[in-house]
Image 1 (cartoon, one colour):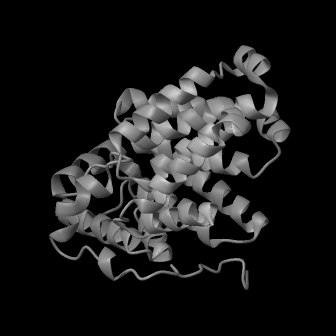
Image 2 (image 1 turned 90 degrees about the horizontal axis):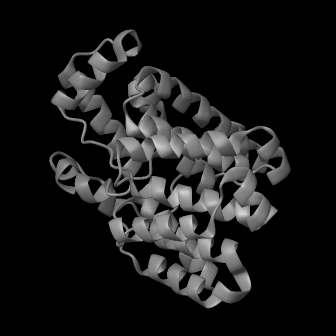
Amino acid sequence: MAAKSAWAAFPHDAKGYAYTGDALKKAWPKLHAGDCEPFPDAKRAAALVKAAGKAAPKLDAEALAEALQEAWRAFHRGDFKAAHDAGIALGPIGASVAVKALGIHATYLVDDEGERLKRYEQAAALAEAAVKALPDEANSHYRHAFALGRYSQGLSIAKALKMGIAGKVRAALETTLELAPKHAEAHTALALYHAEIINKIGAMIGGLTYGAKAAEAEKHIREAVKLTPASPIAHIEHGNVLLLLDEARNEDAAAEAYERAAQCKPLDAMEALDAVWASDQLA
């Protein structure tokens, strides 16, 4: 990357992802089927301000709702830097959009491994502050798990386990699902938790030490696909889970899952990046 703070632009056509005016609210249930993020209207903004107390920005509910909607519009059209910066400006209340923007951009549009890890660390710190300020928000915990999970994937498994990241990720995901049982992305992440540990340290030690079970991985990924059948990432991670559990036996089934992901019609920039990644795996 040219500079440490460089934000590579979204490389595809974003015309269909603008969601101006009322279009955002109308599309919201589909856009957020995976993460169960509530629509940030004035009522929601007021509730967040009340819950966050001193950590809340000095804005009235209307202004905060507008700022959150603008941040999410930026995210959905692939302007990840604007989404991140707008979220940061709103403190813990903006952490959900800031962490998602930072994490998705790092995953797909940052090539430098060290820079990517640094951004996941930043994202984890933002999410940690949100967990403290808004502990009753499912996505405070989910974004924390997401950032830590991506960070640990960039380390050696031995290092990640030694740092105790696995336990933190699992606890955050379980809290997410207690607060939002239909959180498809948390089901996906929990499936990966079980599958990655089994893949790296074996079913026996993984089961005894971390409670990792293949049956749990399969159960959670099935639930994610059931909840969000039109979402590319659910199918991608289904393929990834199958390969982690038994690459030789599941190669064809994983390719089918990637194919389903590639055929999904993206609703926003993130889904477009997911679908392109899936297509690349089939090339």
